[in-house]
Image (cartoon, rainbow, N blue to C red; front, side):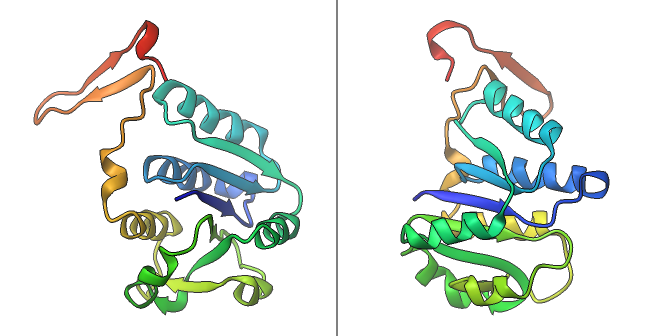
Length: 178
């Protein structure tokens, strides 16, 4: 399943850390791409660097118009999920959402434009309480992929060797690089 995350409302001076974490979670939990509505070249470069070093082929790009991205996505037949605490509980909608391919997941920062609620095929609540959009994205993607995304081999230049007590990162060389 092809999944793209659209990050809305990013304010470079305020949201740099959270938006970076949205991108890291999107990559680690199975999305293929993050589209940043607006411009923050340093943030995009930083996330691309992570993808290049750690593998997985994740892409990040800026888009001037979120409306244009959403329109093109809809015109191509893709489904749109908007993560919001006001939405239908994830447990009631996830089975239907899994049938959509490709899928755009909209994650807001500041107040989300009201039209997103109408444009989205699903407004999904990952818990109907205030919490982080990073947490909502992680839970959503994990439920979407039934936990299988955590078993992916990213084939990057860097790789963590799991250990109960030590931090071990190895650097791959040659043909193993992805």
